[in-house]
Length: 205
View: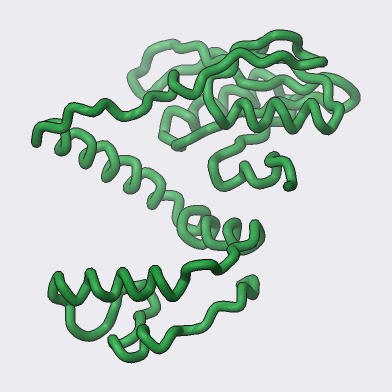
């Protein structure tokens, strides 16, 4: 585990500390939980988490347990539906809210469909890599048994040809897409960029 200069606070010890899976030991009534949350938040305030530590944490939570991604997606979906049933009126942001036009010196003016795509596009331009947007189409059979067309986000052209696909959530249909890609484009590499991989493309400040 990367070193981040973190140690258990006095408040943690007085309230029973934390177990290995993150659950607090000791009294578990609601008022005490709120007090613990506030004290832990105050104790962690100002600590700097490096990119190395963030990557280690995300890998530990999700990469080592891919099913957790699917479980978390389902949990979020159920929570959103429940909040609307309870009278929530403020709509949540959709992926279309992050769509934007982008002018690239290599790909020209392209319409990017998510903030992930924008981060990757800017990185490719910074690195001087020639690329095209949504010009590779893959035919695949989905879970429903029907024929579908998948349009890959980025096509890297040049000495080494490969494609990049950005993903927020990985579902079963995505696996079918990727299998079909390797069958139809056996000589072309494929890189899947999820939220836990974006740090590699972000510009250092």
